[in-house]
Length: 249
Image (cartoon, rainbow, N blue to C red):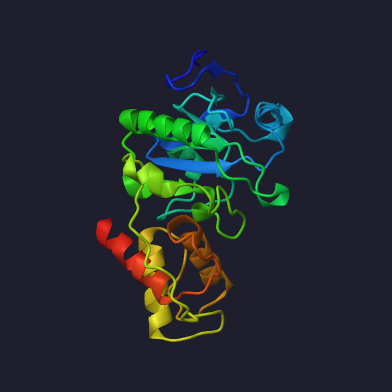
């Protein structure tokens, strides 16, 4: 087990006991970003490095841009929980997790500061230089667990990361006031939307019924890729943005 950071972006090593080998010989091919949802970065660090918490991540980026590593990249950290992406149920075994300190909506959901985003950008780029992680597998916690999570949220600057070669992004079609499809809608167009979301990676069955799971997946997609409006309604903006992202896969 390493006692020094894997990344030159990390200024300190503060080991967490909450890790294990990646299962079935998996290597990291997914990068997962979170916000801490805690009052301070120090509180998050304390929690992520306590055995009783049963949670951890590979890295923590505080609001000033300081990066702490807690779990070696070769190991399985415990950050994703019950999650799924593109047929994968053990997200922890295939991912590297970065906690970006932000207290989240319960504490006003402040903007991510420039110093912090610059550090996240540099850290992600460094990780990608050492791991075969494709752009479409740089994801939000909300993408892999849309029924449980909303982090890092709509204020996180995914567009900036994509400009730096980190993640997948297209310019979203602007919302233009059409009502969009809501829960209870049925038909082949709904099934086609569900199939597209599943092809992109979200866990959905193309039932043709716009159910709660579909609304949650649409909200997660909007939060990451069309952050101007998060309402779970599949309007033209959402559908067109999804279609253009699929073309980029």
